[in-house]
Length: 265
Picture (cartoon, rainbow, N blue to C red):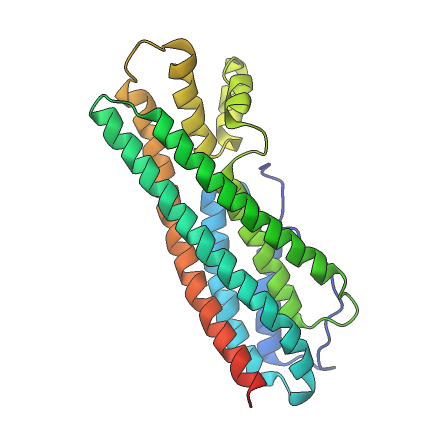
């Protein structure tokens, strides 16, 4: 992901009172911060997850402004809230599974068994789950594009959440093309290593380290120092992302309960 990329969102007409309520302005402020955020690394995604948690805390207060005339718009948001909750839970489980396979690989390297195959199999399974989540999010985003004229600020919150989830899932799954195809292109070009290293995710850095030994040292045991550092960095990134998703997951549950309460009033 290039460092210049911003969170993608669709500008929509927001049906708000003529004089915006302070709570509405608080939600808009959080949205603006997230829209301008860069999606370059795991640290910025973690920052965005923290911002998403703050956003949903503002939304909880904002929901108290919704009148009975706006119940219909909330009904439209309800389905989306369930989808976001499902994707968040699935992504959290995928992160946990990937972190476990990173830890297993670290353990196998220390034992000098170097079970790279098990790591890659697990990675493929996680990538498949993530692709399904991305498909669901894309479908959800396309649905929102058809509601441009009559959308509330809650649609903006939903769209921003989709964008952040997409960035997180894309980070974990790596590039769309085969990881081994990508690293084979990156490996020989040592002259641009400094820039490439800055722009390459922790997931791909691990792939590069492993591919170096598979391609050039097939008969030798992986050197601990060559692989352990990127694996440790990836494990830390996955842990931070998992913690951030857990906080957002709790906010999404609370948000859905609030929506249901409004509908049941």
